[in-house]
Amino acid sequence: MAQYDYDLFVIGAGSGGVRAARLAAMSGARVAVAEEDRVGGTCVIRGCVPKKFMVYASEYASHFKTAEGYGWSFSEAPRFDWPTFLAEKDKEIARLSGIYVTNLQNAGAELVHAKARLVDAHTVELVGKDRTVTAGKILIATGGRPWVPKDLPGIEHVITSDEAFHIPELPKRMVIAGGGYIAVEFACIFKGLGVDVTLVHRGPNILRGFDDHVRAHLGEEMTRKGINVLLGCQHERVEKTEGGLVSHLSSGAAIEADLVLFALGREPYVEGLGLEAAGVALNDGAIVVDDYSRTNVESIWAVGDVTNRINLTPVAIREGAAFAQTEFYDNPTTFDHEMVASAVFSQPAIGSVGLTEAEARHAHGQVDVYLSRFRAMKHTFSGGEERALIKLVVDAKSQKLLGCHVVAPDGPEIIQMAAIALKMGVTKAQWDSTCAVHPTLAEELVTMREKYMPQDLGPVA
Image 1: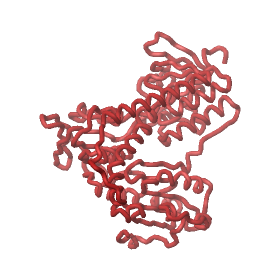
Image 2: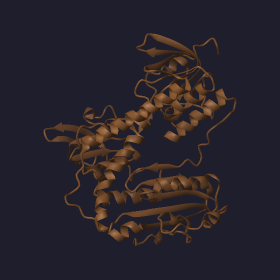
Image 3: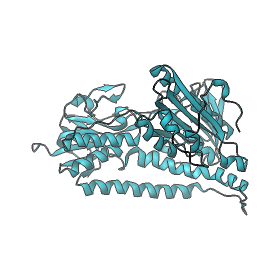
Image 4: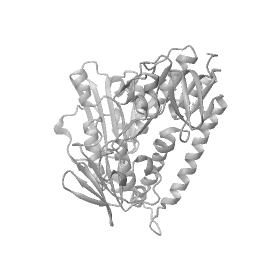
């Protein structure tokens, strides 16, 4: 590869790109990474990490209320200061971004702060730097960006999830458009921080792609917490008035708010990458790759959300690592996209791995379902109304667990361990042979013996 400036040039310094670049550089390869924004990508800068900090902050309101049921009293009402939180959040994000930079440099990779654009299969233009470079291999890891309907009247008045982390002050009233995990998480976050929240979704239920029991249960819990969930309608226009912003909906309703957030999904970030010049193929806006993350162009690969496979940070990291192992360590490696667990940091949170009940029935025919819905011990004592839901989907013939779904405050923590068992092909008998840890919410996972029938889901204890 001596005829090129670099052995590997990575476009995008998010989680997947950084992991691939580091591993490649540690093999002795000459590696450079271009990033047009801050190092760390969506997850660190404007996604998972700052959002989780916001989740933590928003949960304290309910924690204080629960504490009173346990005998705690407060001399004055707890008060939340948004500017203080923002400042501390930004400090931590800056620290984490700096760690990413340091790790790249320590591995021997060169970091270039610029937008990169493909000129051909081996040449990259560094926009604004008056510089082009060549590389034997090019990896695209630019992630995704929020999608908004650009032709919607008044769209210029709304914000996306990118801006939600930097609003100067908390609104009193807020409308959130969308029904996916980003919309749901922000609805719970801002409600927990004291904002009057309305969620508007065009579909019949939130969280398309998740198990139907999970979707219905979380919708009920969100409504119980005071979030106004409007289904079966969508924005027709957003009007700016003296009183704020008015969302005019297809249902005929008009809702006034101080802030409107659109969280209608994300799209692969391929704008301005020069993919056409290099001949890289797209499918519905995403870069097409094979099992080894290689595009139709022999010298170009892509990992992470820009390929629109499973758009999760840990998946991008594993795809980036597999690429590096294959191309720089002579160790052909692919990432198995089956049985990847996911989490929704709603309130209560969701942990899910494997197939939904509907998916399992389509793929395997007859399935056994085990389902439990209950108030956790913590809430029965304090008088809280929040309910947990646990569901197992089992292949009726082989008795292998096909899916595990948990809706509870610790759902994402629980599902990590469950994912190991399902990935290994655990059967219901093996699962049930595990002794319960008592008293815990998670023990319900291994104590469900009676198959669920639709009429069984009655009043909650």
